[in-house]
Amino acid sequence: MQAGVKLPDVTFNTRVRDEAVGGPNPFRWEDKTTADFFSGKRVVLFSLPGAFTPTCSTYQLPGFENGFADFAAKGIDAIYCMSVNDSFVMNKWAESQKLQNVSVIPDGSGEFTRKMGMLVAKENLGFGNRSWRYAAVVNNGVVEAWFEEPGLADNHGEDPYGVSSPETVLTYLTKDAA
Image 1 (cartoon, one colour):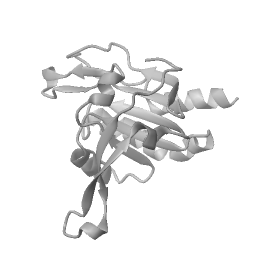
Image 2 (cartoon, rainbow, N blue to C red):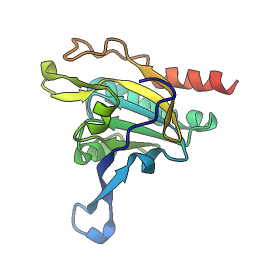
Image 3 (tube, one colour):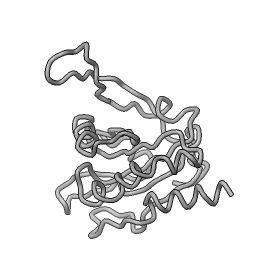
Image 4 (tube, one colour):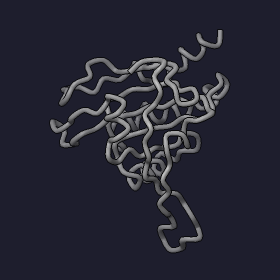
């Protein structure tokens, strides 16, 4: 993946809160497309191996969540966290992380991740197919800047983190604004 590439057209199966549903689990299915998330906006998209995993839950997601005001000041309209997890898992993770600023996108089947060239096997960790860790600044559905962790490979023995960190993306946005 690289700057200038248009994001793939995918439909995401999401669960959204709807009090009209009633009961203890007031959510309904709502399909959202790549265009719904990315058209007409300048956003940060970051993807990671899995909800509830250590690096993702301790550093990457909280860093983007807590730094939202800094990103907004640099012209970012939204921050999206994607993972090859279903909507139930992503929503529960968002709840457990008390997200107010970052929205989660479930790529349950891995279709978007595969079309991005970022789907990797993680059988060595018992995960199955997951996303390689990356971040991107996306402007109206087109990749403006790309931040991919080194070593993209199936069953990689490590989980590199740094290139796709909130700090790295914010540094790019700061230089871009200068």
